[in-house]
Image 1 (cartoon, rainbow, N blue to C red):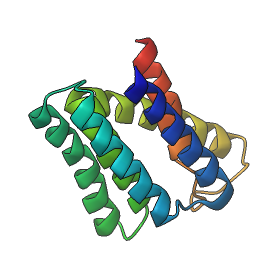
Image 2: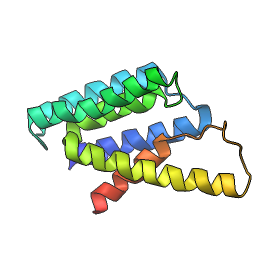
Image 3: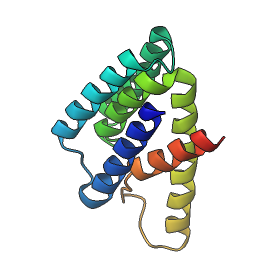
Image 4: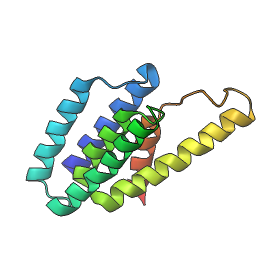
Length: 138
């Protein structure tokens, strides 16, 4: 229960910062990683193996970020490494799919109503937070 709340708070804060600044300071990632490592050691929500597999979701996003030269933010990948440790691979992938779906709908809406052009970037971490809430509900 504690890890669920802490992870929700982390994602909420990351979402707000992503909206305002489009970049999360490294210190926030370090503190969040330390918190989630501590929580994963003391509150076993998933097996260690599943937690390590959950981190691979974030690693794949980081690789995609490098390949696309930052079209996907590296912070998004780091965030999924942090969440993967607590949630495991299946829930982390579900949250990613939920967030991708919601952000795609939002982007299509903005494009249809000509609020932005194709080069415009939108913050992704608010959708990750909503995806986390969706995964918790489902």
